[in-house]
Amino acid sequence: MAMPKVINIQSDLDIVAARMAARDMAKAMGFGAIDQARIATAISELARNIYLYAGEGTVTVSEVQQGIRKGLEVICDDQGPGIEDISLVMTDGYTTSKGMGMGMPGARRLMDDFEIISIVGEGTKITCRKWKR
Image (cartoon, rainbow, N blue to C red):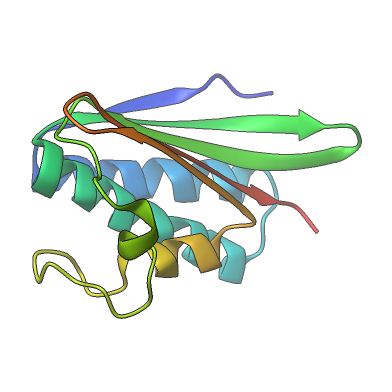
């Protein structure tokens, strides 16, 4: 398995770097072009959220295995303000008009697993995975 790749998010360029790192690892793992695009799009949204709402954080991209399943895992972590109402943020159509418009519900739909842990005043950690078919 490839070593995990950690991208520090502090600027727009870092969002691009996170997207590219996820796409490159997905390609190396044998994901098809459509799944590569899904992963890259979800990571773009999540990394942009780190930049816009927390100011900085990390995106860690790694290979994972669960039994015979192999997949790509992305952990987006920040020490920002946290999310007060996760169910509201995960509602289709919810926007703060700062993001790309797809929002976290869109990112969740693009990935197979999607988990959020957020503590107001401490930060947010989102773990998502895409499994090879």
